[in-house]
Length: 151
Length: 105
Image (cartoon, rainbow over all chains, first blue to last red; front, side, top):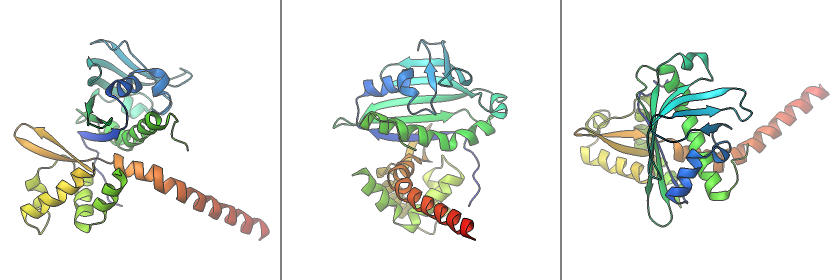
């Protein structure tokens, strides 16, 4: 297996058979996020400058910490990001996550997640590299079938 | 179907090689990728276009440069749809066989 240098800018993209509004809800409403985002309950008021927080489903632990930089429903969401579930990632500076939602015709919407500003956060870069694919695959399955990914 | 594009894109050694190069280091220009292949610029562009069509490569502009990023999500979708489904039964069967053989030993 080749070694991977975790990338300071990571891009993830998926086409989902759903409307931009449905995608926006799936990203911003905790009842959806808990079904595909490693069980996380994501909470924010989605106002610029508001805290962005991801909690374990029983709220015993905060997984993700950040702040809303821009929220333009249903097209664009930018937050800062720090993963708290690992002491090594929690000690690193905030990085940035951008969600872009674009209609792609025929009832399909393109969702792109750009996780960048990871230059000073190599542990976080390594940690999220596999995770975003899992999250987006689960999000697509949830919106298209109404069911979370099994297994 | 989206899966067809992904399987077709992956069914070529040059395109798999390009994905491996992007896996090592992402966000590269055509010129950088071209320097790693014994192929014309036009040939590399053609392969990148197929990878982009399948969603395996995403391009983004950074100033005057067009950067190519590996997008692993379509591979994850194939994993979730095709690999997990078949591989898990196989693995479970092997695990059962191992337990059985070890218990009877």
